[in-house]
Amino acid sequence: MTQDKDKNSAADPAPERIAKALARAGIGSRREVERLIELGRVSINGKRLKTPACLITSLEGITVNGKPVEQAESARLWRYHKPRGLVTTHRDPEGRSTVFDHLPSHLPRVISVGRLDLNSEGLLLLTNDGALARWMEMPKTGWIRRYKVRAHGTADEAKLKALAQGAVVDGIVYEPIEATVEKVSGSNAWLNVALREGKNREVRRVLASIGLDVNRLIRTAYGPFTLGTLQRGAVGEISSKALYSACGAHLGALESASIAAQTKKAPNPSKWAKAKPKTKFRPKRSALRTPNGPKEKR
Image (cartoon, rainbow, N blue to C red; front, side, top):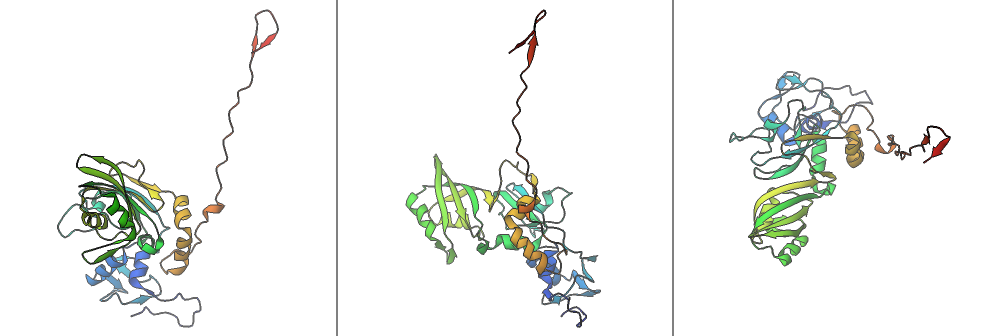
């Protein structure tokens, strides 16, 4: 199914799958868009869409929950310090409290970059751009996720070192993981863990396979972005310069590749003005005047 278009127009964009275009427009992830289509919430020119196997050439006439879909805003990214006890989903069938229930009301609709499970905490990136979120999540992007992990049990250095070769747990293949002991406190060990993949409950499952029961997991970094001193439950927007410095090449490609993108050139951080270095303050040498005589220098 495709939208009608003028076949004689050389400027017409290439057809794009509707889930991909709506993700780029910030409606949700591709999977979430497909779910909305299955629920009958997406329409084209008033006709309810029945399948995500649909190619479109513009957003004109497309509505979600009765509201027209607009062109994507410029990509934005936020850091969120996720507390324990929240699920990373827009709607939870079990009625549990979600990350999105606790975000400030002034934020636009945002999508999480990956997930943190119910009992995990720390850095969760949020964006208004579904295509950007998908790119950040992909293992081939090469971004390292870093965690501080507290686990009950004996931390065997040899077993931890072996994880750098990868692991297979219950038939699931996990890519190399870097894990080192930071300190041991009683029957618990604090570990620093780094990985590039991030499968569901990966850290917990892999460490359990070598006899360590994770009882606290804090993500401290996702690629070039860190948790820093962000308070639990707080949200902080990442500057455009930092975002485009880290993702500029990919964002530039998105601007030209999607029918949902705004038709403007992505900024180039290398051409932005740099702050001038501050000059040291050098006080002038003052002169003291004696009551009845000439000036005396200090």
